[in-house]
Length: 223
Ligand SMILES: *Cc1c(COP(=O)(O)O)cnc(C)c1O
Image (cartoon, rainbow, N blue to C red; front, top):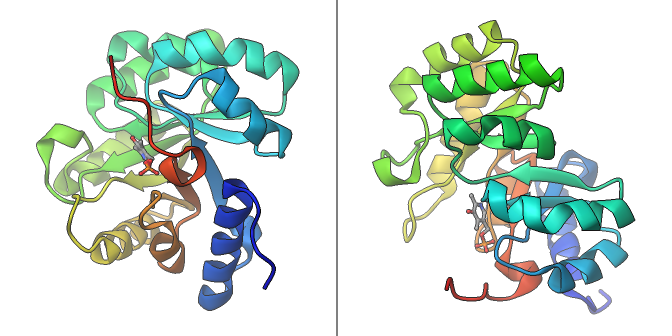
């Protein structure tokens, strides 16, 4: 095999290899480059290489960085992957092309209202608290059916489910669980897998992997 030259090519090759093992097509997997905390100068090389899906975890940071980059690269698709406060729902709906952190009834209400008002219907992933860790956000598994129903009634397009498994534990069982939940609810998308485990996630059905460090290197420390 030829040596991968850039981090993006390296990750793409790993995705293709995981797909081959899982007998899936690479087109079934969307690579989201998680650019949170990285400045525009770090993002531009990936844009020049053709990467178009990017993930950010803060509305305000994304509002500062992306309008200018998007002018140069109009095909960019922005994914919100971090917790969202209800009072930022309108801003999030205006800026993002997908929201991966829908996790509670109050946010369903706020997003539904924001989408009605703007006429822009942004596909959402319901974030599931697969590890039962309150601090990361995510809908408790027991409350998932009701939340999905509320989102459907609010006319929020549901893209699928998302999870962020507990750290330092083998993630595969959590990925398999999310895959099963998505199937049970008739949802296509599975947003799971990060730099350390995206290949495992792909083998277990991920449709969207969120990769930061493997593409950009370590994030600059928060100020
Ligand atoms: C930061 C972040 C990622 C990317 O993590 P890496 O380990 O840098 O790949 C993925 N998903 C979420 C929700 C994140 O906050």
